[in-house]
Length: 250
Image 1 (cartoon, rainbow, N blue to C red):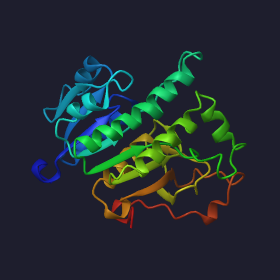
Image 2 (cartoon, one colour):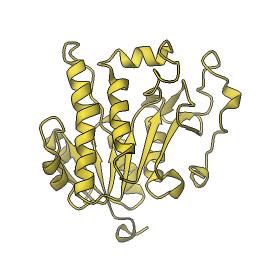
Image 3 (tube, helix red, strand yellow):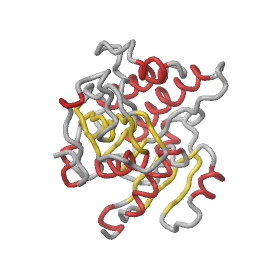
Image 4 (cartoon, rainbow, N blue to C red):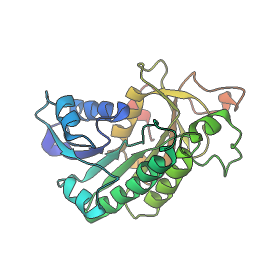
């Protein structure tokens, strides 16, 4: 489609492992992109080859919601692919709260100020693990050990869902850098308790959600077919994997 038809998408966390793939997928579908990243230099280097990407400095720890709204540059579509990067063990709790919770909430406020029409949040399976009896699930224990990241993400998810914005919360399973080996299993909220998914597939599903009315105001979960763990849940009860994007969100 022509760029005029599909418009401009702001990507938060554009230089991250998932964010870079989101930008690539958007460009392949004819969108223009405003790439928000903490390091402007890193973004400019990453996307130097594309004339359809405008890079902007976007540090959610330091910026106000008003400053963020200005950075959206008139984009009416947002994909948030942010996530704090675990490093210094003494900083993880602070960073998880600052990025996955408070930073994402400021971005939601900014999107409302800027008149954004669709907001896609890439989160994680098991964010709601405590409420659904999965506190001892190894995936919950291990992921939440990094700064309580799942607990922080859940706060931002709930804020987005109540914001009035037209949203999709996409909760992928364990993220892998390799290309997908299975098709997309898209489950309802709080139904996928384990599994993995390629970041490439996460990017494709996130971008697809921008235009699908069936994704509107929904929380969905994503793993690859074949990655479900039968010791964690009944894999045969899950939806079938779908290779055809036309069948996603139907």
